[in-house]
Image (cartoon, rainbow, N blue to C red; front, side, top):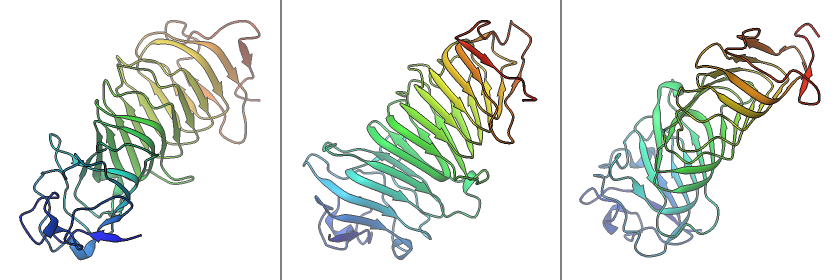
Length: 288
C-alpha cells in the first residue's frame, strides 16, 4: 500500500495537499505516517482534513521521535482509519473518526516517552472506536466518544499506562486491566464488564456501577454505591470503604494463586453487603 507522509511544507493544515509527501491528501487504502523525519517541519494548526469525501485510510502512524501535537479539544484531527498506532515521544493527539466509519478501527497507544505514565498523549473524541490498546501513555475517552473494548497496560508491567473515561462517555463493553491506572467518571452508562489482572482502577463517586467484575489481581476502588450484578473475586483487593453501600447480587470469592482476595470494608454492611445464602454466595476465606 502507498505511504503518504506528513512533510508540513506549506501553511500548517492537514487539509493542504502540499503538506503531504504525495502532494495530495491521504486517500483510501493509504498508510499515513508522521515520524521523527517530520518533526523538523511545522505541525498542523488544528485545521482538520476535509472528510466530506468518504476516505478510509489503512493506517495512521505517529512514530518515536515525533514531538508535536495534532488537533485540539475543539478541533480534533478527523479522518477514518482501520488502525492508528501512536508511538510519539511527546505532544498530544486529539483524534476523531471521519465520515467513513466503515470497517473496524483499532487504536494502539504505545508512547515512546521516557516516562510514559506522565505523557498525556491521546484524546479520543466524537466517534465510535472498536478497540483501544493502551500500553504506554495516558489516553482519555471523551464524553462524546465510545470505545467497545479497552485493554490497559502490559502483562506483568508497571505503571506505564493511564486511562481516563470522562462523564457521559458511552461505556466500553469490556475493559481489561493488565497494569497501570484506570479512572472512570462515567455517569451516562454503566461499564458492562471489568476484567482485572493487575493495576489500580477507581470507579469515581456519582458513576454507574459495573455490571460484572472478574478480579484476579490489582486494586479496585469503589467510590460509588450501587448494586453489582456479579463479582467473581479470585485475587486482588476490593476497596469498598467509601461512597455508600456496595451490594453484589452474586458474589463468588474463590482464591487462586498467591494473590488472595481481600475486601476492605468487609464486615460493615453499611459499606459491603454481599448476599448471605447460596447459590448467590460462594465464599472461601482469605486463608484458603
